[in-house]
Image 1: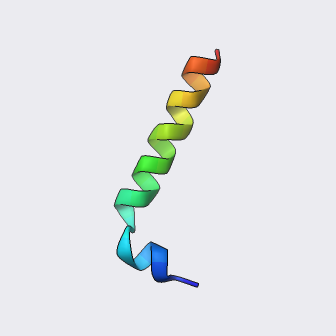
Image 2: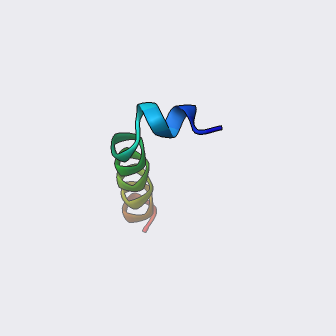
Image 3: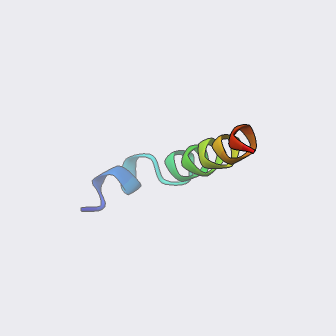
Length: 28
């Protein structure tokens, strides 16, 4: 359940947010 969060943590979350934000900007 928390295996990915434990391995990536801030990195995975930050990357996901950055990718999401970039997608929104590109979409606009």
